[in-house]
Amino acid sequence: MKKLLLVLGLGVGYVLGTRAGRARYEQLRTTYEKVRGDDRVQAAASKAAEAAAAAAPVVKEKVAAVADSAVHMVRGGSEDSAPDAEVGVEPGERS
Image 1 (tube, rainbow, N blue to C red):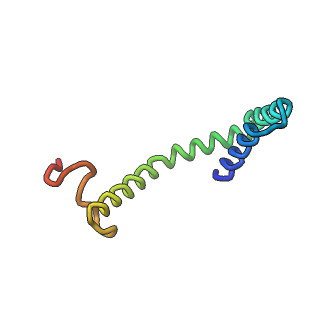
Image 2: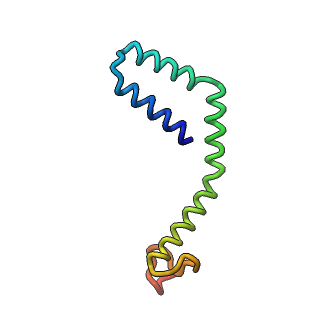
């Protein structure tokens, strides 16, 4: 994924920064449209979207756990113990 973003960024930078003229721009745009419309590319994009959607709940739980741990550490606890407080809730105000 990082390589894809790098290649995409380089391509955009080249297109925006090139002095090769309109003909080269049109050639690049045509190639991009062909690649984007390719069935294999569409299948890979669909598969990546499905994988991201399936992983979203797990990622959400992990991010929440890390955030809770960070809040606990900032409030003076250690990383090994469980958080004592909820974010934005003062002691004694828990429901």
